[in-house]
Length: 311
Image 1 (cartoon, rainbow, N blue to C red):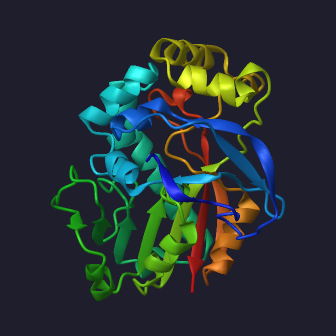
Image 2 (image 1 turned 180 degrees about the horizontal axis):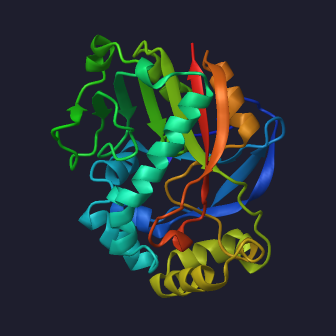
């Protein structure tokens, strides 16, 4: 099954049970193909009344999670995804994996946030990036580690890959980073609780910023969504139209698709998530996520929310 066994009834950010229907959506068919699962029927997007976070009413099964992230942005991932989404080119995939200009800008944004939180550069010696890929967004701290399940990531001269989370607490890191991960998981609070076992002095989290458009028109119905998601020709045609004409004003007329992001945090929601997880927010800011990234016009969200926190 593509979907997780249990529906997500409460807000994944603040935990509130007060949620309302936002619109209908569909799992991107390339996700189903990558996991070798049958395309599921449409799903529901809900909005939290209390914190305005928007989320899918279903999570992904463990099989789908493994298919997505075991060889994340590898050759098969890129090929299957471009087969459904023409805009997801090798160029964009490569840039997301390691565009030096993009990575350097993100590193500077992270350093700026840490400094604005009142943390001096000399304080951070050992850093661990949870799900940090090849370590590209991690600033050049003295000791750099990533905890990464992606089998394509390997040690380098300046980066050590940790295969087991139990190794992290022995490092006594000054900083644990977690960028672009919380929006991908079924239970963000559970992940933060795991990350806190590192016993770090400080934490840095980053999630996409921006509110997705509520869908209207023909593709707001479950019937139409299921129809196009089961036709490669129709799906590709719609993706091309959205890339060329789906600006902020027109995006509401295109299908709401769930690919990797299961929730879309509001600033209030991410702050409440930190509080509910026992963390104190020291500094919060937004940054232009897509600056310097080749093919960024194909990305749905161009900004991020960065949070510096401590226990």
